[in-house]
Length: 307
Image (tube, rainbow, N blue to C red; front, side, top):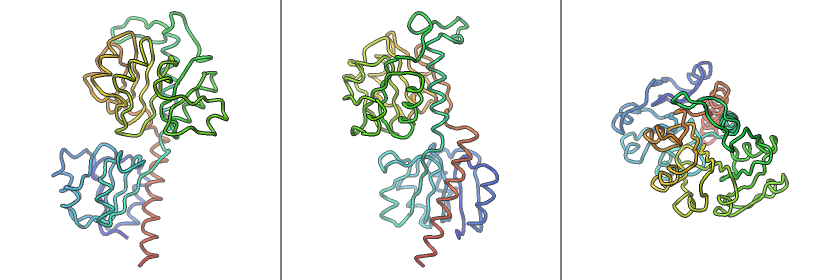
């Protein structure tokens, strides 16, 4: 059992699961807002031995050094690799701090977002910000059927998006770190990145946080009159190269400002950004909460076993 567990920011845990946290800590503190800086983070953690946080706060080595009692960090968000994490995993490992994360809790909402925005774009549904009617992307209303669509990053959300688009009849090709037999068996075609960009009318980036693959060379291959989605937690591109590309006859969809990389870019007429994560749904919070609780339970059970 923890002596003190602190959620240093809103972590998306639903109330009935939040109550269960009290079974695993003598004292539970849940902060309702995001800390302003590292000093505030350290003050919130104080002498706690367990910490919860989401993707909006960075917990680096310098902050952790100020909190020597921490034994467990529960990331209430994705944890794919030390490089993409918002917690200094290397420091934690060296100092005996266990860090857990979760996966596969908000993917369904992301897939729905892509389908929704793509259908609106192809059919010309809705209105522009200035009140004028939108125009169908290809001049007349079009279906997803036969649409040449490239997926960059065929992990869980990329795979689910590809499956959903295939159901609607899209022609799917993909680029990932390696060719995937199960994807090929579905009829998806593996292509190198530059060929994927040149060939397809729609590109959907489903990359880990802080993974940048689109530079000037890639945007030159992508060309113009293209539809670009980014559903990661950070931009998949160099900002300067992206800003040059988006000035042309192109359109980019991002659900969150984090995915876009800049609130200012959201005002660009060729950018469609909602400013909210499409994966943060009622059902996603339920899945997240249960997985966070399971990680804590397993850590405490393992610690009892080794004592």
